[in-house]
Length: 156
Image (cartoon, rainbow, N blue to C red; front, side, top):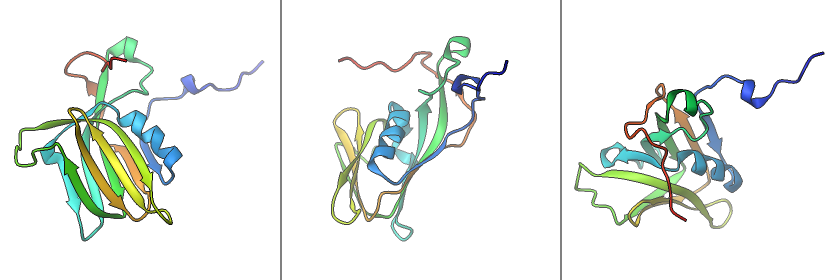
């Protein structure tokens, strides 16, 4: 007798996901939650209409955590079709600042345009005015043991 393969049987692979709809963005947001990044790893390319972050993402999807402990991986979060970028609660002149991403949400406007809101810990936020929703999250390194050795935890 043969059995169908289960999700758990699959091999772990780097993420390479995209979101072009608000529902898809919820998945990217949950995978990027608790990612940390130095303020120097934010890039805004106005001529290419692209905004990017190099994140140290916690691997929420990791099913082998009991075996090897909590892991992080460096990932690129790229937003295309960006018209403007604004920030709140961030001192961009302090190059030693480490930011923590809590959520990514979309505030729709007209005809597919709107604002992408990246909510940061400590009341910080990035607000991207976008012409159309196009976001990618791609792992670019091998996973590494989380320096804290702990799984992020939120009260509530």
